Image (cartoon, one colour):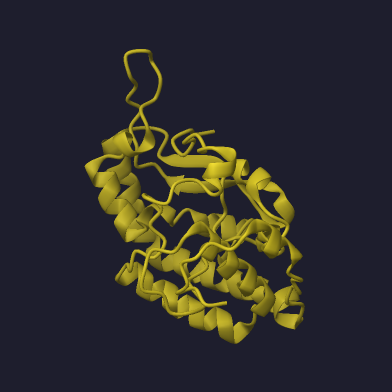
Length: 235
């Protein structure tokens, strides 16, 4: 797969592709052990930062500080993801919450840029809901939009991020992202995870914008219509 290509692949073509999920000692055992070790170390090291951000979040948007939401996990099963809140609860004249992009606070935007709002997901990793490296967990509404090929991205635990496996110089499309995720499922190995972990650290330090979703709409929007923005709904 060449992620630099921007042409969309037909859904029916993707469905015909045979996907062989990587099955080895690392994917069966080693990856989980590595996830626990990395998550524990990261939680210990980042705990002072997390505490500071929690306090800032409390004074910025109030309680609750932790944002919880259902996401799609391994095998298509739902789990509750944890993040720090960065939106207020402002409503329109009818009492309906404003769109998410209108409720993100200035402080929240900064925290998002640093990815500090995702630190609570280390708890998701320790619980076994997520992995360090893996396809990003999406909202349940995406399940009905998947092609058979796309669904293979849930053959393994979702992760904090699945950086591009090939060089990219643009904001990737949904199709490119899902193709990248499925290729990762096929190629998952210790060495690949180490490479992608280094790429993830680099992305946190110096964001490249390849995963910015602001202008790409909803996946297969022409066929199914836009997905309502539930990102601001806390459980």
